[in-house]
Length: 160
Image (cartoon, rainbow, N blue to C red; front, top):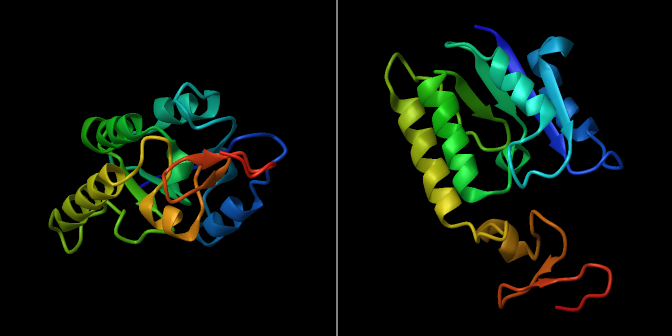
């Protein structure tokens, strides 16, 4: 099984170090780590597209967290299905143990649990990119600050 990793930050000003550190124990070859420095609003990203061309059945794709894959609910689900069902590549999301499609003890348990958790988690996501757990902490995946009304505030001014 070949291992690959995908890392994404929204701008070149942001650091990839935290994501690289999380992947370090897995000893993924540097030429199998694909990094994009752009928004996750869609999947038209150069490194992501190159990664998709390299993946083969039986490979494992690791990402630090699901929001590194993308920010658009429908497109994340579509890509997850494409990667796991069409290409037949396993996905391991490092910061959410249940999002690991590898089979447990020769069964389909890993895939079924991961698919279910992904759909439940993303179905609960606000289409603006605010996830319920993040919202409860006042965090959001995009820019701005989440408010109980569901509106984003301008993080610089604090205005809605």
